[in-house]
Image (cartoon, rainbow, N blue to C red; front, side):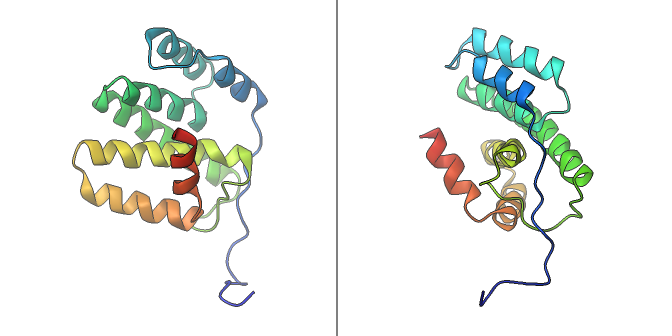
Length: 148
């Protein structure tokens, strides 16, 4: 345990949301209008879900709609902060990627980081990189590996 902060906050573990997970899994694959429409339906049904907003941001980004992708990711980021705070997070501490329900928040952070980079918001990219690395140093690599 050398190098580990034993006095640091406990990891934040969000509750699973099987309804959102199932709806996102049922959305068609690919950057087309059918996928966007399905994801918009998921967001309308679950506007509090950072995972839904992150998926919508990813679809907009894949379609080359950078400003929309950024805006969707920004909403997902704020919904993610809300979810973390409701689960006891106090602005710092681990949010492990290995805990599946945390992935929506981490994906929203990543999507916002990507969107900020696309529009030239360098300071925000740096801030979000630090946020993601502080939440889980493995998150960025895991998301990038998942995206191919």
